[in-house]
Image (cartoon, rainbow, N blue to C red; front, side, top):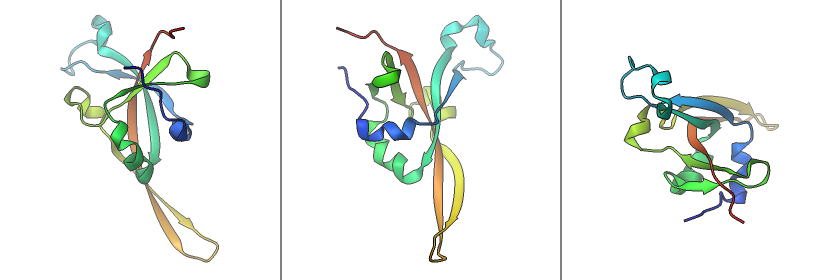
Length: 121
């Protein structure tokens, strides 16, 4: 099934960092001897509340549009093969409003597997 990443969540991918995940099972393995053990991914720091909004999209593959056409992403949430890249604490930021109230925003670090896909006509 070809699903497109929901447009309302495009802003969550701004500032994403493209990384390479070494998914070899043993830390002593040389990933260069197993090219299939290297996977492209996007690393994103987002608000906890945004992560909770996209949680239902986890583990499904979505095609990207626009400048990222030809790519597909899959949010890693609880796949045991990618346990090291499950969502993790991204820290908190305190912000002071004009009224003087201090508000804390909690962040998480998430990874999306990044694949090339053929664009069907």
